[in-house]
Image 1 (cartoon, one colour):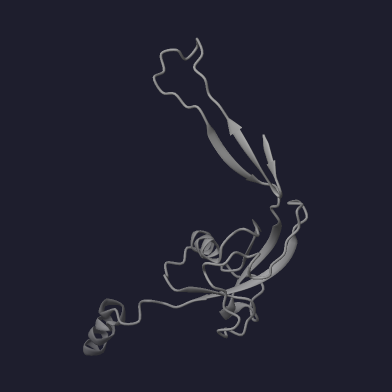
Image 2 (image 1 turned 60 degrees about the vertical axis):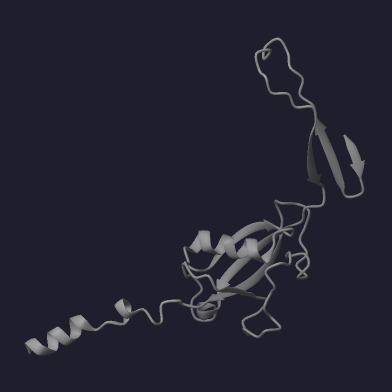
Amino acid sequence: MLQYENCSLVTHSWQPSEENANTKMSCNLTSHYISTTYRYIDLSLMLITFADTLRKHPCHFSKIVHTHLTIYGLIQLIKSEVGIQSTTISIFRDKSRSPEAQLEPHLTLEECGYDGRSEWYSPQEHVIYYDYTSEFNECPILMCDHYFTDQLKLS
């Protein structure tokens, strides 16, 4: 094992033995990067629309994540956890929805100033807000009032 500052490089070698002598594949060296500086955050993610009015909402949830997670990864986490199908999810530091509070998708949580703790069992707690826009505002099928106009003709 090679040691570097704040990380270690683990190398494994695989050699054929009598048990797997019929195997034609040979692998001499595989390297894995193992970071020893992971820091963890207990992240409460809240939908801005209901952050003040509803404490318990299906779009509010908590996850323990590491600080190397990017904001884009956080967006994917929100999509999978809540089931939002929008492609325009924005992440904010606070409830203001201002451009200054919006977090850039290419940055990690650590780069955004969210420090964590190295112990995964007692992570630092943070709240992050998110918002999304509905992309179904000009769909003729959804905007159709055919049912209501038929009911008016009957009466």
